[in-house]
Image (cartoon, rainbow, N blue to C red; front, side):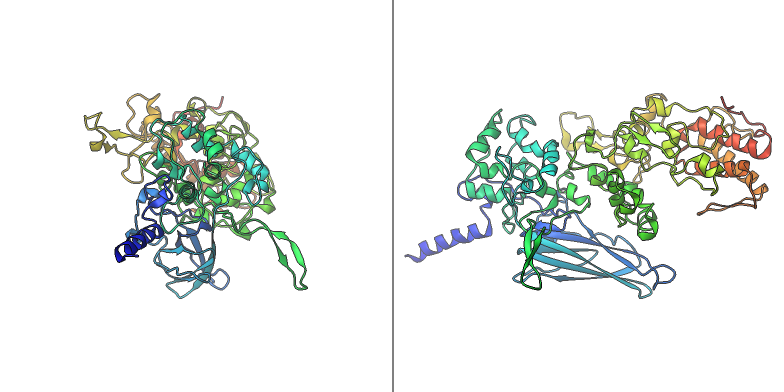
Length: 634
């Protein structure tokens, strides 16, 4: 053999080994190399990257009783970042201040994984097996907490049954028939099928399939039985025409390609080659019943963001990151969890919320730290409700109000309510106050302690389509075409673009202060701000101010009246220190003061709020608010 031929053959073999020919393989389809993606789950495809963010909760006053809690948060390097090499990754600021973090990694035999540390730790799961990532968080006083995260690298096996035959072991549906049947009704289950049959877009092509198939990671180091690897082996080519029947042709001629098409179980749960149950030996040499191996069960938003964060088409995760639901440092997520707060986790832990909506008894709700991510509100396996929401249309409020036809807002109302029945709270043996959020009650014209009276209300809950959703998820401001509607290259985002409305849930942009008044303008022509001028002087100070200022005036009057009746008003739980043997009027007025302080916005129901405060003042003092325009009970 000549030296020239030797080097030519050797070079070709090297190119194949390095994946320079990508997924074209044996004359098959060529795909563009995708950016680095992490699925933010603990089971990943061999040859892919894992990323994790350091987080910690401070020690309590007695660090021995309440030590530092360290958390490893799966981190999603999403396609929107367009990281072509891991060296391009720019470390974020630490998620929490006042700590130093140390990482370590135990990798399986044969692995050459190198740990990149910082606020986010990254490594490649380069061989099949178990990886243990450990974090130690130390505060400024030397108090430490340690935790570990176990990650497995595996290969893809497919859900099974897509070719019309019965799923075969170890395919997912061979054991998880119920879950597979539920998944099959979702849009995920047929995305690729519909697209190649021409039902999605005439522009659909080979470079669209990365998010619509299973295990696609067209990078030379990631050979794990995913869709791109199967295509390389089969020689399959993307169809030249997208017409009905194309999917049936793929099933008939390339069943191995069809087996990894569409967005299957493993797209979210990670590859399942290590998951099928295996018998284990006991100490006496016998065998124990088969037990399942690892599979990803996390709720991190990065699992969805691996596909749903590609601007300009998919921006939900970027919006969500600006929302209160994503505020991982919020006390609302790290304080009311654990065994001492079992009743709280139905709303303060995403895991607890899922258990609550699934109807589990309170003692079975999971008590772990988890912010409110995509799969907390949306059930990936259930398409019965629009948008796959876990709660839809109907919700029972704590005071017994049965809200029907709430649509998607039922999801919001299931947590954003007072968590108390005002009559039981005021007239029962143990006085209680509303729990922080009373928006659901106000929208539904209820929730205050009214001494049996019927109060006037505003109409927002009746005329705003989908109530909570209609305002908080209103369309985000779009793009300014700069006078060139046919040229998008010079388009500029309008103020508030992607920072108010939709999945930010914000009415006011945390970035530029834009107020999303579009929903208001449907009725309030010319509205440019939420600072609406009141129609009357409700607090009797001689001046007609904004709605909020009028309510603030009433709150000050009512608090002063409570203090004159021996009530100490606090800025923290339990919010009131009561005098001995307080009357129902004192308790009712105190309840209503906290109810309104928890309203979030007076615009949820201005008339009800004003009437409730005026009534409370009258019951407490024996006279109406002096000089005020009184909204009388009906």
